[in-house]
Length: 230
Image 1 (spheres, helix red, strand yellow):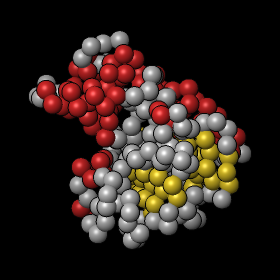
Image 2 (cartoon, rainbow, N blue to C red; image 1 turned 30 degrees about the vertical axis):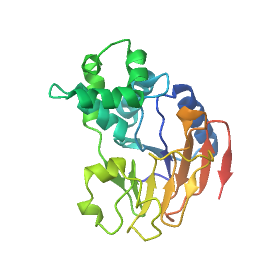
Image 3 (cartoon, rainbow, N blue to C red; image 1 turned 90 degrees about the vertical axis):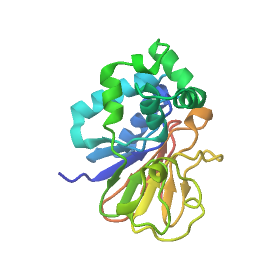
Image 4 (spheres, one colour; image 1 turned 60 degrees about the vertical axis):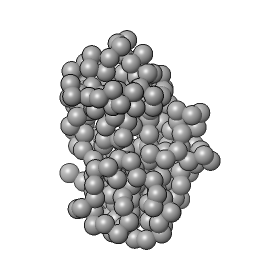
């Protein structure tokens, strides 16, 4: 099934109320058109409501199927490592120190291995990328000059440079998050779009809408009610 619009949503980081507000704005912006939603990872950590975010996304995927696509972010990857029986102290402290403490508080547990089995299983099966005709959706970005089929998991989840400063064509237009934009506005370039507008740091949560006919976005929507048509 094809969808008239595709909305991509940046890093949520436990900001559940902002997520609900943004989805309401997206509903207004799409004006009744059918749409699917692609979330580019980092649903947990730092913000206050990681459990509610994960609960919501699991339920939304169950109800909407391929109309709701959730990708893995580096914070989900850190959780997977921290919750593993083979974890090291470094795995645990790395996650805990990068917002995992707030995630544990939202679940009311002291150890990531005690998170609900359904939630851990969901995080573990999250894909790294999604492609359509014009775009690659991914959490962090890609390594310039490396074919998309040969990109490493490390880069897809963690890369900043040299990706952010590259003006080269990556084969597909890259839609990503991971690196907060200090301006609070999405960073649109000729070859990529960064949707991490720092929701967990006081910025808005941002979505971009795309059509099947062009690779650049049609509009932006934010959790504070902005709809900017391009």
